[in-house]
Length: 271
Image (cartoon, rainbow, N blue to C red):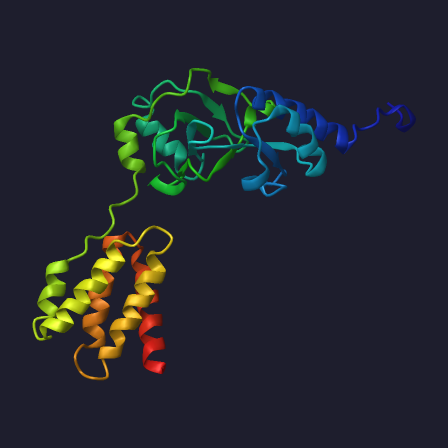
């Protein structure tokens, strides 16, 4: 075919609008959608703009064009995804466990792997390689690319199955460290009753702090106890041990606790 007879390429805008029409159909089925680029990254602030309303989809794509469709996972959409990344360990894991995996909606991905869609299990969040190398989870706070919209095959059209207990157990985060409050009590034996009471009150305040205020409470209570270091009533070690136990009781991460305690003690000593 000569250059003069060559068919013109479709404009990018036309391609994006075709993708938007596919996204609109997904929204009509209750999925929460938003545009993504070829690199699979969202082209908009998807946490704010993703929509399940079909009438909003076209304008979203016109404002933030993208050739791929992102779909929100977790409680908002009613399903989680186990992503098996071929060549990075996901294929090995699947070869070992495929006979135990229930029949469930399954998509082939662009890289050759699989998206296993499972009915959302309360508390499921995103994780990378927690189950095994190359096996990721997308739940609350996550999304996937809806590869069937690009022409890739749907391997299994079964409805999304519940998480099997054995797989849910593998996906659960490790249990948080347990605070050893008896060790704290033993460490305060040499402190007077007043000091023991002050530390217990601080521990209780941190352990019972509501989510969103736990770190600030840990910082404030540690700072408050640090005033007794100069008088010799408490040591920095006693305070750090007690406050670390309180932070664990509150559900804070170990590294976050350690950083907050160091900061509070440093600030108190500097003042």
